[in-house]
Image 1 (tube, rainbow, N blue to C red):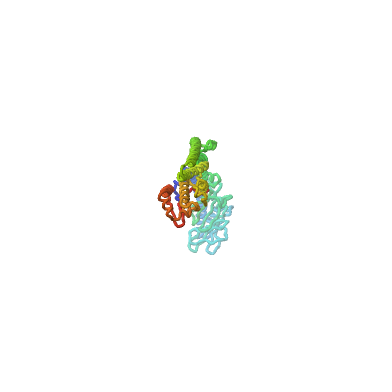
Image 2: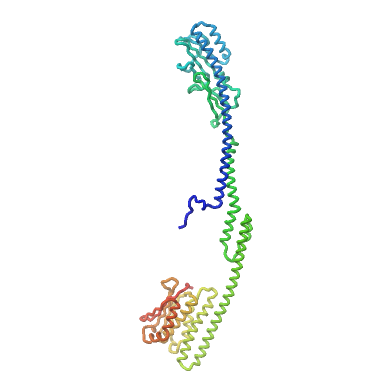
Length: 518
């Protein structure tokens, strides 16, 4: 089973991926530092805006406190005086003088006894309830103004004052007011808006602070716009990340184009290289990196050397083939000359036994000549010798040289077109010749059947020679022991397979190695 790459194993990553990760790790801290510097600059701007807001809020709260405290002190003095003497006109006149300048802005006050009769000032309705557990009670009239109230001694008169919103807004405007400033007076969960920021949206960033006015529960809440999140700020924050990604991507792209991809192209050219060919010099020169071009030139030089070597080997093989063909041709001719000489001497033999001996020798020489002739014909393709052609020609020669008593011998062939080597073909030809001569010697009129069929074992075939002459007999035993047995046993050892004799059927059988079928 093929091993799978381990997850997270850096050694399994490609060079491009490793380079991208290294550049990312090297440049990311710089990008983070730049982003932090941008955020720090924005934070400093926010701190400055917050400091200016505190100064403005303190100034606005102080201005409102001075006015309200002065008015309420004058109102308490009048309240105490009128509580001691309800007809104290000078005290009433003094407090009226204090509120006279503010009256044009809508400020009003009133001093009332327990029955609600006005002792000084002008009475006005209370649209909201005032708390009674504080020295100075305060309440907001939404959208209109602020009401402050004080109480005298038990069952004594009370005093209250109304300060309109425009008047308080004027008091609460700081001299250092910026273009975007909003303020409101807050009493518990109520607020009176004094000023607002123009065009304020829900997405605007605001800085808010509170300042105690010093009267009752009154507090001033002020807000100002923070440094806006502009497109330039966004770009300033994103630019380091973009530069980091661009630098890593460009580095990977350049290395991939100039190094990795050319190496892959060169590797593909080398992998597709076939000995004897030349690596395309045009593709090598098109590589962008000089070092890789030099490596490509080296491979091209090696391929040229291999091609020259292959050409030399091919030329030598052609010469060797021609020489081998010439040798086989001369061997074939020499065997034919020997066969002719044996035939010539057989005609002049003094006895029938000598003629038979010459014929026996001639049949073996013919067997060897048949093998060489077929081998010479098969040398162009070098596939092996066809046993069907060899045994067919061999049978014809044996019938032609059969003794006088066996001139009518019948030879039947059932040979599949198996291909064998020359050594196997020589041994098979001699074995068939010996077995046929043995059959003709035992029974000159017997039929001989030669068959070669596939074996159950791969790359093997079975040679079977059948004749009634091979049935167990005294003549057969004598010929085998005296002449043919030793030769046939030697040929079986050359074929590296045992020779089986079936005396009941009358057959010799042996397995031979084959190259395949024609």
